[in-house]
Image 1 (tube, each protein chain N blue to C red):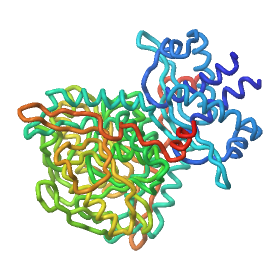
Image 2: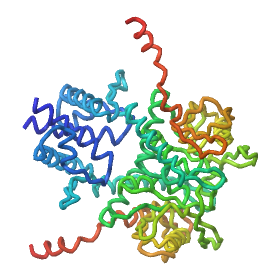
Image 3: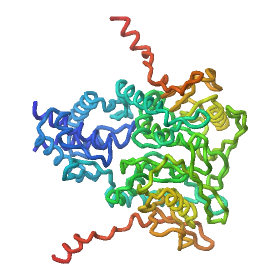
Image 4: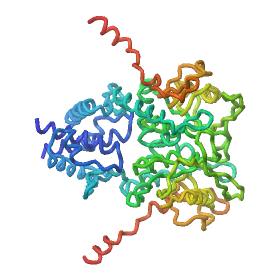
Amino acid sequence: MDKVRRNERMAALTMLLTASPNRIFTLSHFAKLFGAGKSTVSDDVKLLQGVLSAYGLGKLDTVTGAAGGVRYRPELTREDARGFIAQLCKELSDPSRLLIGGFLYLADILAQPRIARKMGMIIARRFYDAAPDFVLTMETKGIPVALMTADALGVPLVIARRSSKVYEGSSVNINYVTGSSAIETMSLSRRAVKEGQRALIVDDFLKAGGTAKGMADLMAEFHVQVLGSAFVMATAAPKHKLISGELSLMVMGQDPGENPWVKPGNLLEEAPLPHDAINKELSL
Amino acid sequence: MDKVRRNERMAALTMLLTASPNRIFTLSHFAKLFGAGKSTVSDDVKLLQGVLSAYGLGKLDTVTGAAGGVRYRPELTREDARGFIAQLCKELSDPSRLLIGGFLYLADILAQPRIARKMGMIIARRFYDAAPDFVLTMETKGIPVALMTADALGVPLVIARRSSKVYEGSSVNINYVTGSSAIETMSLSRRAVKEGQRALIVDDFLKAGGTAKGMADLMAEFHVQVLGSAFVMATAAPKHKLISGELSLMVMGQDPGENPWVKPGNLLEEAPLPHDAINKELSL
């Protein structure tokens, strides 16, 4: 029956780890659950690591130390991420998506769970090691991708509102200037975040950066550090945004007299090698 | 090496099926992917069915017919669903959540990916067989649970807005009356849904039912059939809502001079036995 047991453990282990992304489970936890030895579970984990890697289905890390164990991090391979975004760019370049005023119809793509999940996985990959405490978005259209990013990172989502609501309790409100020079309000419940936390900003669209800057200002009011910002779509113009260091899945631009073009953004570019990897390369 | 191969297949099969909930995969698809025979993959599927059932991790169905194959449906066991909702009810009954005006602070719970996913699984379970074409919600707070419901059902999410937006193209706008007798607008892009589709309404809160009725009216404008409606929280009063047949995860009420109470809703009740199951019972 040992053969069957391992097969069963492999399936259950896969389910349990992937259902709680980026959460560390001790080997003892699984050993107890399966009535197996820790070394047996350790072998299961190694086997699963190989499978995930071979099929490009994410990453299973072994974390050492007192709080150690194994954790699953959803990831698309670079190749899959590029193929997925290239496909989206093609779809979004279809003239039927063009609206009056040069806008692109994006709402259907942003709210598809499978698409939002893949986008969230690509964004999360860049921020696993930075380990934000929560993902912040501004209502409405960015919520699905921000939720899926938060899910992959294993952290809560926090949603800033356009106005304060009675059912959110006392709030901090700030004013910000949009790209079209309008003054808008952004509101967040006092209970939503804690001083000293670290935020990742995720939203659907970045043009001048007024809303993104508003979110950063809002976080400053809460004494929360912003670790980075990622957007589904950034516009090529204006080149200089009101925020810096922004990442995007896609970039949209328009040449005079032409329909807009959509290209992969800087989240799809080769990430710079981490320092120790560079040293390794040099020593070869 | 056969032993290792089956272990690997089990893990990969689990990952691939759970990553695309409620989608039918042919056995040939997996046979080709794994370089294995269809009967071998069929044995893998049976093994996985047993594991999922033993650990209460969802349901793997074999679908017969021309478009047949296997599909994974995320499900909480009745026991897990009850435990999860009981825990939420307890947490929401904490006096610190009480806001001025008798409102409950719910925003943090609604936007937690892991909580929203479990809520979505409980709602989806009731509607797998009804097979809606999409999930409809009204911005903002219901979006996470509606997205996770749509994810489990393997269908898109459609988000109605409070006003029409230039980046959503031409839209259908309706007016509706809220519980506090205010007249509000609800807007949906003409491109968002197609005539003849079937919708499931999911939202965070149901009081008098004005917003829910608005969503149903909006669907009528699009000639879309509403299969049902499910809410995270329904209020005990008023007892008669502007819609009927509503389902809820939790119910909230208040006795004179007391703090509000929160109890499990009718989504947690024993579902009536299907007709053939009743016949079976009677024949025993």
